[in-house]
Every structure is written in structure tokens, then in C-alpha cells.
Length: 107
Image (cartoon, rainbow, N blue to C red; front, top):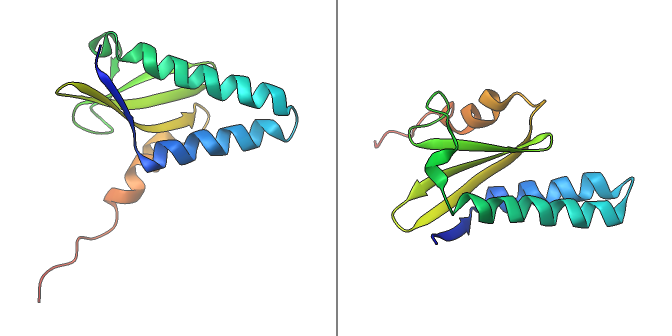
């Protein structure tokens, strides 16, 4: 099985999801974040089976779980989880945020 790695942003996404759900149901929040992490582990078994998302990034793939979408890259020997977002969000805007910033030019 491939190694599973979470980016700092994906960890923040999971924390934010848990905190949001916990406002209404703290126990469900813990269980649901656990389910999302379990889904991420399942991705490592066959990452190429999931939907490619080339419009969001070269090599990016996604996997739905409930109303949430796990975005990841398959790299040699590992799966890197990069975002976990609610499906109702403007997904393209979430991925475009970082690319819209101009790259500083050397002076």
C-alpha cells in the first residue's frame, strides 16, 4: 500500500469540517472526520481509480465522500491529500486562489 500524506491545508480543512459539524453534533463531528480519514486511506489502495481533475491541476484527482470531496495527487510511493472541500463550494475558486497571486520577479 502507498504511504498517505496530508498537506497542512488539508489538515486545516479536516479541522474546519469537524468544528463546523461539532456546532450541532460533537459526536458526529468526530465520527465524520474519522470517516473522511478512512476514505483517504482507501484512496491509497487504488488512486488511479478516482476521477482526474485536470482543470484544477495536472495530476490532481478527486474522491467524493458524502457532501465532501477529497482532492489528492498520486506521487511515487505515496498519495498526497491536498484539500478536503464541501461540494457546494466554488471548487475552482479554491484552487485558483494560490495561482492568481503574481510571482515576484527578481529585481
